[in-house]
Amino acid sequence: METTTLPRPPRVGLVSLGCPKALVDSERIITKLRADGYQMSPDYAGADVVLVNTCGFLDSAKEESLEAIGEAIAENGRVVVTGCMGNEADVIRKRFPDVLAITGPQQYEEVVSAVHEAAPPAPSPYLDLVPEAG
Image (cartoon, rainbow, N blue to C red; front, side, top):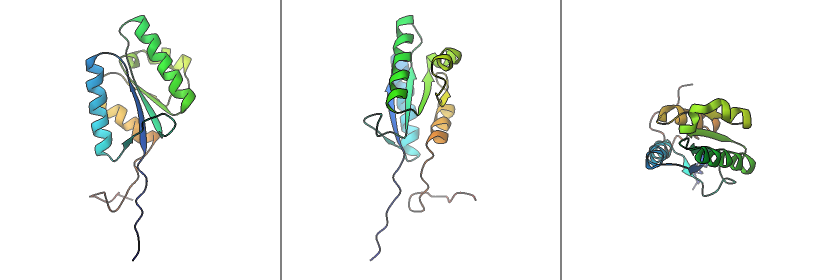
């Protein structure tokens, strides 16, 4: 009997900063990514990409967001930024030019697309209902 090995799904690390609205955004993003076949990583090292959901309300929150981005880049290197501080993309890019993508708050489709681009979901004929067009 032949055994079938399914491809390992891509893993996403996440840090969510800020208010309850940011947490709701993170939960919506996670729900969509899990539906797309992604798994959550408990740490940055095991992630294929790290998503940092930032806060831009106060200067102290902005600094905490920048520190979180820096930590994710140092520990993983493949980082997508979203959330309120995404509205200040120039500030983020100036400090962290290697960030893969930056989106603002409630930009669910854009951030999910950025994660797909950074760590494409593994196609599987056993799990996908519609084969990919090729």
